[in-house]
Length: 260
Image (tube, rainbow, N blue to C red; front, side, top):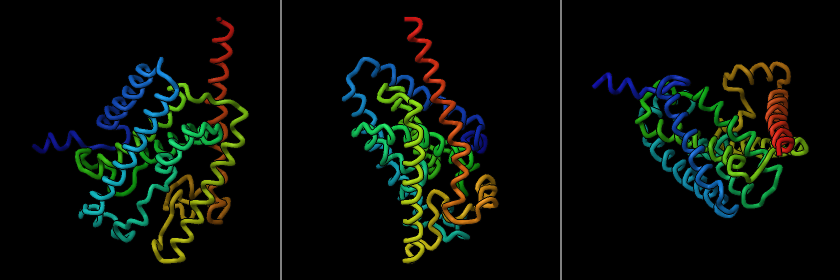
């Protein structure tokens, strides 16, 4: 029985993590192939429906989390479970709300934001899971909720491109950065409001008030020791990443055009 339980332990890049990653990648591939010749309306409906299901699942997962005695013990030094600290306002979670808006409105800066920022935010969360989400059985409700939500956010964001609804272009990138800064600043203001009112004295969505020991943010904070502003150097990572990915799409497009 113990061996069976040990098999389901999930940590970044262990066997269970890799199998789960592969399953969600296959889901994206199969869905993209099945919808290849479908109308744009159908593709949008599928993405929006997936996001709605993920959003509902997110709150079901949080309900289980609020009842999880082990999780409350693990996080007692941070005050334990607090609904005001579990809203979908983290860099990855917020895409459950923004992806449907981006897809339905067709706003390129918003679609670019969701495509670039959604997967990388969720991937970082999976690679560096918080207390209570690393080294436990995937079969625990909180683990299924955490990993299921983040994997779904990744494939929903990528589906914007694989479904053919958006293709990155260099001209989109400046507004993508502006959109990210605007969203981050709004979330920072929400953090400060929660702290000021006492709703959540340690509100730290987007990690825009405290680094919480994140080595990369600690480095940025050593450069700019000011809340929110210390996030600005992250553009030094996001910018080249977006340029590289967009350059790949541009190159693929030129090669395809040349061969036609």
